[in-house]
Image (cartoon, one colour):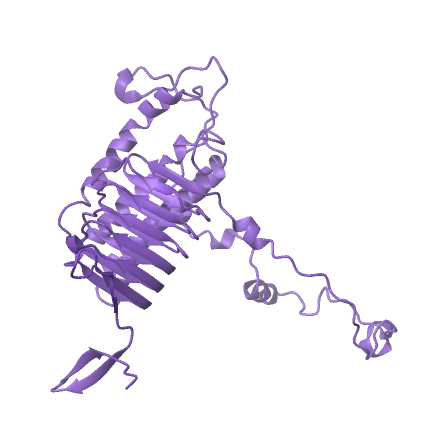
Length: 384
């Protein structure tokens, strides 16, 4: 079992994985194709493999299990697009999207949970150093027999539902089909246990106040904030609460930005990037220069976005309340909305010192059947 490497050794060990992720990201750039969502889903999911870089608290990463789940959240955005696009059309694409998800959830997650829940296991000091087969020309020491085996084929293909204890109605049906008497194990109710004979019950409603219920599930699900560049290609900004000084300055057009679960925060992007995705954010502001591909807003509430440069596409999906400020260079942008409301777009006035001109995007439409087809037009409300 090799000893824990230093920073340089770990970087060299992860170099092949990083090269694959960089190559996969490069395939998502450029002109969009019919399989753009497939490529983005596969490319974003590869960051889950970096769980092996976890080296303990303070390393800037979540625990391996959480890292796999969080990495898949970014890929699932595009994976869900595949499921929607090809629903009731081409089942091969649906099966591909489902297989990709199963590869990570539960596949990789269960493997990490079983063997490496707290990260890779390293040998004590004095053990052989970590070996990179690409640079050591086949001189790596033999693997320790104590290392856990790789996941079996059953990890991804076998039905493990029978191995799990049944709960709910499944447990009831299992008990009935077991052949045991239905009343076996039931306690006999004596006369003193019946409600009408119990002295501790009365028809008077007690005025004693109950202790307030404390919901601990929210605290248990709370995740730490994250602000980091993963594998040199993807900026991840997650769970930022009340932070209005978030700035990404050192970025380039080959990098993407994923903003998730932020509230009452402001993010500034100083340079051109490939694409920006804002997911499940509330009362959050985004100021960016330019994007090469698209700016996407999904599952958000009361967000404000300002484009200071240009953007070919801005999509708004399942969002309630969005203020979109466009610059003169971005007036030719294509804006796509779906299942969204209260979308206001503000454009510069005709004069340099003029006020912003606000335009409300319609959220209600009328569909009329004319000449053998439906004609759709936005509904306008007049106070006259």
